[in-house]
Length: 142
Length: 142
DNA sequence: CTATCTGCAAAGCCTTTGCCACCGC
DNA sequence: GCGGTGGCAAAGGCTTTGCAGATAG
Image (cartoon, rainbow over all chains, first blue to last red; front, side, top):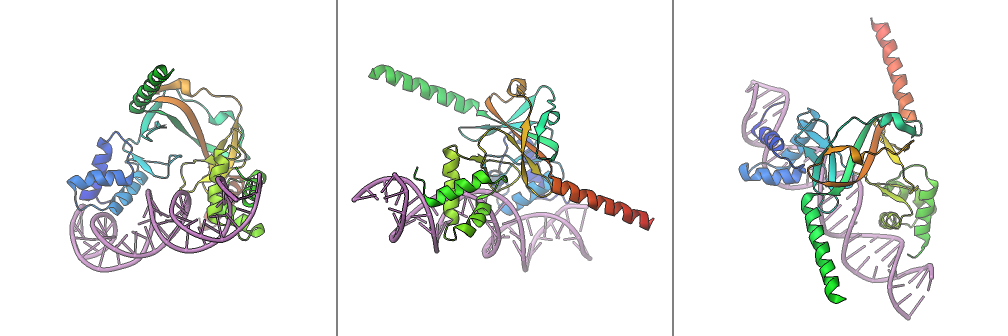
C-alpha cells in the first residue's frame, strides 16, 4: 500500500476526528487543505484503510450512509435519535451474549454487534428547553 | 388505511414468508400473482405497514438494502456471512445491557439493538464440504 | 521504471417522488 | 363522490467504476 499524499491526509484526518464521518463529510473537510482531492479517492481510501485495519468501517443500521471511525479499537456506538450524530459507548464488562442464544434457526452464530439509540447532549438540552417552553405556554393558556 | 388489493397481497405475503425480503424480492414474488403491481407500490406499502406495526422494518447494518420482517414480535436477527441470508434469533433471558454502559460521551441511551453474524445451515454444509475437498487434494499432492 | 493511485465523469444501485387515473368506502 | 392509492417514469442519494495521466518507491 503506497502512502500517497491523499491517503495520508485521509488517515491523519480520521485519526484526529472524534466524529464518525461519512465519505462525503470527510471529503468536504479535506477539500479545504487539499482542494484537488476527489470524492472517489476518499471513498476508495476509506475502504482500503478499513480493510487494512487502520480505521473501522461502521455498518450501522438505521441509515443509508456508511460511516467510518478513526479509532479501530473495540467499542460500540450510539445514534442520536434526534440529529443522527454517532457517539462511542464502552461497556464495563464483557457480556456473554452468544452463550444465551435460545433459537437461531440452525445458524452457527459467531459474532455479535451492539447498537445503541439515545439523545446526544445538545439534542437533550434542546428538547428539554422546548418542553419547558410548551409547559409555560400551557400555563398561560389555561 | 384503505385495504386495497395490493396492500392486502403485500401483507399476506409478508405474514406467510419466513424470509426477510427486500422490497424488490417481494415485488418479484408478487408479480406472479399480481402482474400489474408496481415496485413503487411495494416500497410504499412496506413502509406504511411497518409504520402501522403490522410488519417490522429491519435497519440492518452491513448491507445497503432494506429488509422487512412479517413477524412484528420482538426478536433479533443473524446475518449469514457467506450468502447474506437473515435468520431469527431468540435469547432466553433479558440481558440488561443498558445498565452496564460505562461511557457514552454524555449521550442518554434508551434503546439497544443486537445483531448477530454467522453461517446459515446451507453455507455451513457447503463450506464444510469445500474444506474436506481441499484437505484430500492436499493429501494427494504431498 | 512501473505498478499503484488519482481525478473526473459516467454509470449503478436502491429508493423516493410527481402526476394523473383509479377505486375503496 | 371523494380522498387515499396505484402505476409509471423520472429523479434523487449514495457509492462504485473505467479510463488516462500522474506518482511513490
